[in-house]
Length: 257
Image 1: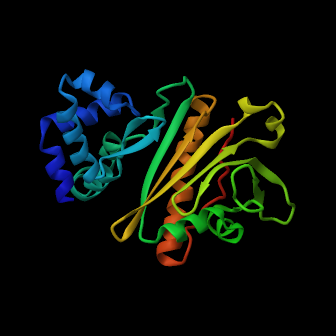
Image 2 (image 1 turned 90 degrees about the vertical axis):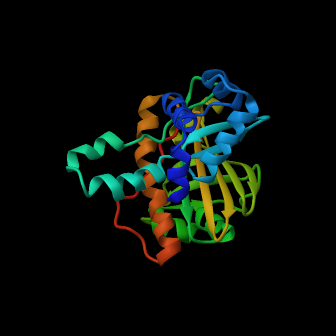
Image 3 (image 1 turned 90 degrees about the horizontal axis):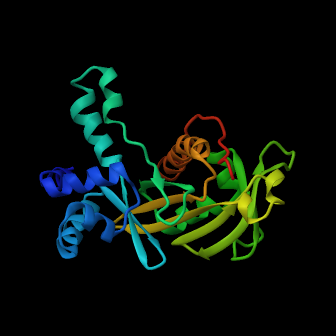
């Protein structure tokens, strides 16, 4: 928490957060243009914000996109605002984890969470059919989770119904997994039917930072759906790995385009 307060104490860093709140997923060049500072200065300020977990970054080719991470701000709100102010004020501090793809008009969603676990255990929790059935309500099934292999999000009621299908695009255990996602009824349309999910799993000291990027969503409606769904699923994943139990919840299906 001390790092967060130190990061927010600087006006330039607050303005950088404001710029990302207005338009998430910006490159260093875009932020420099809006702040009117040198790249070196902005890079230093961004490093402080990232060290405080106030922003996260996602590589896109040669570019690095910067996203606002509202988790520390939410923790500040819960500790310093919620217990002193009326519940109606909570809405004023809520920040949406939304992003717009820098190179396409299709919306992108980014979520960052921190789990007291190991990269290997997080990877297995995302790809093991039995574990996903426990906290997700569906089993993630693939023959081998290798690039080019098919995968499916299968109901656990014994019906064998696949609610999501796709292909493993990239697989690098235990740090990175990319899959395409589509509703089976729409998958025959071709590539336009698929959205894309990237799981970046990075050790950070004794914990793991998991960044989930869901891109190529067809519209704002789908973005709103995944904005509700991913936090629910990933909170349950975090609880399972840290406590061995799961939270009570309804199974969630990530809508596909």
